[in-house]
Image (cartoon, rainbow, N blue to C red; front, side, top):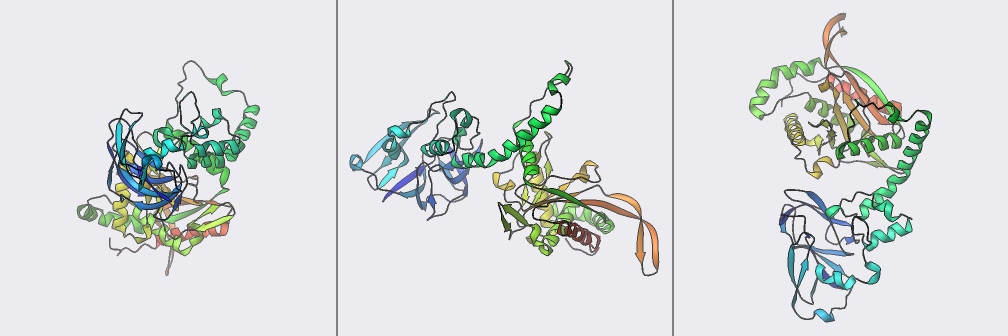
Length: 440
């Protein structure tokens, strides 16, 4: 066996270092070629760094939040023996990279660096595929393409998440997984298109053609896939939130002075959802084929509109462990960073349930689409004053109450109406019984 140093490759013009944001693999894990090993962030881009060779992660040379310079080693792999007869003496190797950055690396016969191994592996069967875009496809990628009968023209359409748009193993496997779903969607669209006239015939000279931006294309794709994957059903509950309104009006000024953020209704909504998820843990799940994954952590996504009109869903991790003030601070922090395009990749990962506050747009009710791979999502509408029947020991009476509609959309593959409806009612019960003496 031999040791192999992984170095941080060039990240683009002017970038000399990166911060380690996440270790995807742990020491002792076996890593396939092109498999992501670490996440990094620079002042220009967030990215994943794949391993250029298969091997076992022997040692991490950097920890999360450490700075790693371009060309500096960040990990050591244990790989199969390689003939090192030509490297039994100390030498130096200079490599000219795409961005004209020259990296000089020292190595000995005990440590094999990435630059040393690459030329040793450059046999005829490892030459990159030439294409009009000059993209590099690793041997592993080419092997999968051959097995799955994916043509060069088809692979060129896949958007890579690796460095400089490089296609990783995860990109290709995700593409293959989505291919059948996308084919079904396209067949449905073709059937619909055959039933109607071409849309181009309805475009006049005064109409404006707007190209979707990257985020809108992703949202469009994800929404279509979610509708294709999950059997969407929605239950509605009208909730009396008068106690919430009275408590917030009483405490909002003090809260702002003490916490430095505005007190909205969102922390109370999330707190009620968290309690209900503990009562109904089979809502806090995801589906993998014919397997149900019951989530231990409760991570609440909050659908957030950004200034360009798009939507993003940052996640409050371990929301069940936060107080009302803690939830308020987390919501404010994520919302501000979302609107200023300052979210980190990990801020949008790991959600187990999502809340959408459509009431902030003046809507009284809605039927949101499930955020995959979750199985349910809740929307809360506007709080509206209405005359309502109030039950008292002395008899019923009519009074003005603050009412709100809760809509709970769930995946009927794994959540039946009884469970989905009971969950919505439980959230409503917690909100209606909100204690006016609650401390924040």
